[in-house]
Image (tube, rainbow, N blue to C red; front, side):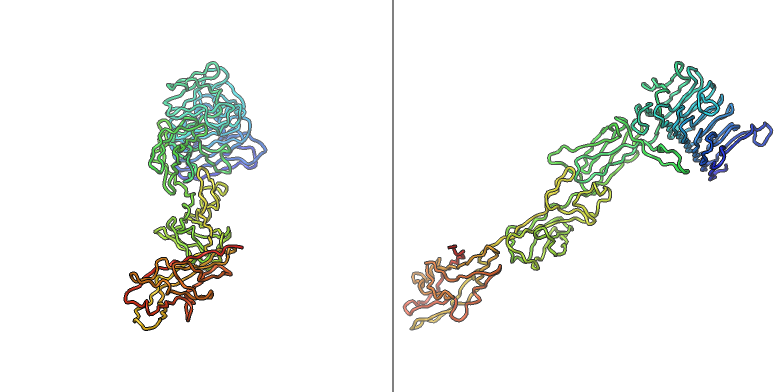
Length: 622
């Protein structure tokens, strides 16, 4: 097949192979070389959908060399043997960069059968070789009978994996092995792995679980013979105890490790990652011409990570557990949570294999803003019109009243962290509970499943919860609450009464003042409202030096005219029917309000000053 060929062959009716060298070509014929050769950069798929018989491999009988060229793909999905060497001296060569996937779906026979003498399989440096099947024979049998369904005496056969980029020999039969080298206790044939990792799974253990034994960058492993005559040659301690009958899977990743970070949020005290040491086909092998590759995870202590967190802390030598995970848990009190939207990174090491660059993950923003601060939160009344405060810049603040939406649109917190809400549209009463929710604009957390996201996250971002909420290792504080209070209060009193400059007279004079400021009574006590009264006295008598006008000041209201002296007088009273305020000074017209009555004998030249003391009181109940 020429370079770049794309070829798909399928056996859909007869019990045939895809390619059949039905005669052994003679020396002078055009097929004398007896080669099945795939050029460079090709893809060749060979499979079978017929079910009448399941006998023949993809390439059958009288060939001598099955060659897969550089960077080509050769996928075989046959129900019996995928590759079988039927003639003496036949073999297979896999070139650099080539990917060979051999799969068998039947439950008997070897996927690769060395069914004659002096046969070979060579995977050259940089090649990829995968064999997957459910075989009640060894997956690869260097001493196979003519159908690959039993073992017989063979000699001169060899299989060599020479510095492969990756390989995986995987028997899905729990009780059968990956490789058989010779028949019984014979010292024939050889199996070699050179300059490669070797991971071993014992017969009976889960084939996709962690390996039982792992060896990195093994210079050489050579095994000859079987049974009592099995000989193992290697310089690696532990591997020198290799017994082919013990292992159902033999694999070598020969790749730099990488890290699959478990999504980490700014509410986690634990950072966790899983070390991937390579990727191999899944247990289905070739399906409809396609291979699904799955990660292979490090086993216990097979790899380690050096972690750098978002605070710049470096955590070295974090070793993998039995499932390939490493983790680091913060032990600070309080917890030093990771910074949202910043990156953690790690370097993974597996023996001589090291990640060429740090592998990063961004910390997920899952934490709502700190609860809002509300100015004068303990003095919000039914008459309050505007609220202000501070919060996380550029977040959105919303308001509920007694757990119900207020109807006031969300307001954007300024870049300076300040916010304001006009609440003049609300009909608040005493004991209403206002709750102020801040929501950032980080958006929905797509890295986590719906079940794993905090309840405080939605399409806009993270919002304060109604009540303290525990998520992972953090407690999200409840949104700020404030209760509407009720007061009976003097909202304002006049700054002063100015009676002006007046001429000395020869008769008693009455003077009306100019008022600076208002006298306002406010009652926001809701259902707790009661009658009120306002008292007045001169806390500093009105006088000029030793000349006193204490008994000259009068105040007139609906209660009549009262002389305002240093003794306390009730001057106003009333009762509100709803929360509100009353400007009493607005009624200081005509005869109401203040007057100063000065007889002739007290009209002395000079400046008179004094101070008034107002006091607002509840009217005691009966």
